[in-house]
Length: 187
Image (cartoon, rainbow, N blue to C red):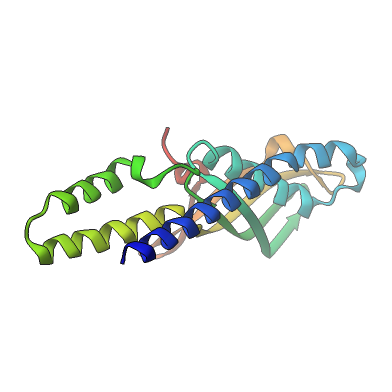
């Protein structure tokens, strides 16, 4: 049992290092550098929207998580005279920051309870719960966001400063949209 636990912990450490490497790679390929390098007229509205959403999520989540990837799929796009409305489904894969899960309060508490428990069945159950929490802490999670993006157009191009991003909320009488800032983790 002890050797299985050691192997399990080694696998988690290797994965954690991998997650950190992906984070560094993502940060070194900042989209602002790509946009600046291209002439403004050659950047499509789809690229502008994709970059806006990616920047919004990265800035909002990177304080608390490692952002591994962000993929957007354009579902519907409407252009009427000088306005654009787009429905975009976005998947973001994140993981917790690379640190020893035993230093995280809720994981440490379960480990301590398991160590102190005298009832063998409860001790085993708490230990299993601890192992689950420990492994889940380092695992990436996928988050899906149904966005609506609106913007003003000038000569068919998005005016970046006019972009507004909303998140789809399932309502009792159909769908409604609220400002996307509501999905960001609180500081």
